[in-house]
Length: 371
Image (tube, rainbow, N blue to C red; front, side, top):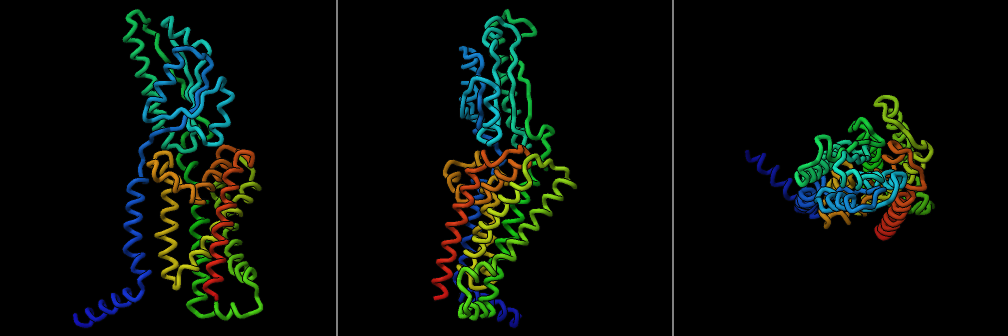
């Protein structure tokens, strides 16, 4: 027991000599618990919705108001024809679309059966199923109120909501999750490998030797990061192959565009790995910093598991700082919706800006440490 006591004391003393590691052990779990306590929710609220109101009557406006007043839906736009809703569902700015036909008000006023169509983006099978349940319940409740207010309504009267699902008609959850795994694999592999490789050079003392060679700074950084960029792109091809040929996930968009966007994303993750290496002195620190302060929060706050729209308003702005958020939109859009750069350019621009900023910070810190 005495030997054990001495060993335990030695470990605590070593931990005390490294306040940064001690801070990671204590602060990181508290920070994660605070963030995830709010963000990790499976509730579906404020579902963005676009309405194609072809009737423009008092009855149609009342139905739209019912959706807008519900805590589960948020009407983001009202258009005139069903054809106009497609860009909203393709870009992800709306999850559901309500199509009200031209003769809706006349049917409701004359106590005849009225038909409306609910169109859903089936990319996220779980959220779509819940949202469709809310929509069907709301329409059914409204129809019951109309029937109760009109005792002379025929037995066949009321409102019939016809459900239609785009992009993932079978609501297969793997169609939503597996493309996201590509983004997650690239983040974990390239960021971790890049950070650990550079920090390992520090531990061995060879990084200082490289700094005094004729190699320029950009040559040193490129030489260290390029192999892991190649590994990341190989992973892209492997994961896409498994997704398409083994899991039979449809790749509806351009494979060349997916490769180009993956390369842009890999540059961001490599920049993150380089930045982590500048704030870490040991491989253990690099691993814990990457895991607790970057990778885990990115997974939970990016929309990979929990929809961003369901997170509290205070947390949602933080998600704009996460590159995984943008690449998830890109990879799922190319896989499931077949959309191109004309709709994905905002996400591509955000990734490019993120990579430039983080790479600049990492290079500046690395110069300061080298000096």
